[in-house]
Length: 312
Image (spheres, rainbow, N blue to C red):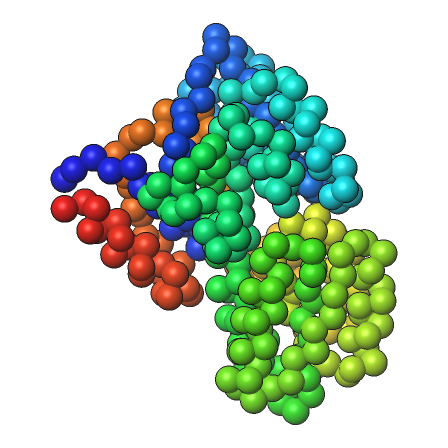
C-alpha cells in the first residue's frame, strides 16, 4: 500500500480530507473556533469537538487553548469575528455552523478546518478531495443528498393528494442543490412540493403561515446550521400547525418531533476535533458507514473507488 494524502471518512454521511498545510504546534497551541450559530444551542456539538481533541491527548485549558467566537445566527457578524480570530494567529481555525465563507475570506495562511453542506469542489473552496490546495480542508456533510430521502419518507407517511411542504434557508450555500434535489424527488413520485423560505428567526412565522394556506400534508425541514440553531422555534411552530414533520437532527425527535433522518452532526464535530491538532500527512483512511453509503450511494461509491485506486 503506498502512502497517500487523501483522507475520506464516511460517518453519518460525512467526508473528510487532509490539509495541504500543517499547523505548527506551540507549547500551548491556540485553536480558533468560529461558528455562525449560538453557544447555547450548539453546546452538545462543542462537547463532541472537545471529545475529538481528547482522543489526541488535547484537553482545553490544560495543553490547548480554544478561542470561541459565536455569531448567534447573525451571519453578518462573521467577517468581523473571523478577522478577530485571525489577529490571534491560532495554529488552526475551525469554521462551522455556516462560518466557512468568512473564515476562508479572512486568511490564506492559517490552516482552516471547515464543515461544508455541499461539495466544496463545486462550491469552489478546494481543487479536489485528494489535493485540496491552499489552506482549507474539512468535513463534507452530504446534506443535499439526504433531502430527497427525507421528502420520500414524508411522502410515504402522510395521505396522498395534498402537497408536501419543504422549509429552506435560501442563504445556505447548499440551498440550490437542496432545492433541486427535493423538486426532482417530488416529480419522481408525482407530488407537488411547496417550498417556503426562511433566513432568520423572524421569517419562520411567515413561512408557516404560507404552509397553512397551501394546506400541506406534512413538512420536511432542510438541513442547515440556521434551522439547527432555531430548532426549538421550528419544533414549536410545527407542533402548533399540527404538521407531521421530518427533521435532520434526532435531537428534535427527542424533544417531541415525529421523525428525523440526517447526518450524525455530533460525529462530524468529533471528527473535526480529531483532525484539528494533528499533522495532516498521515496515510489515508477510508471508512465506509453502511447506512451512509445506502443513503447516498451516488456520492459515497465514487469516493470509495478513488480511495481504492490510490491504495494500489
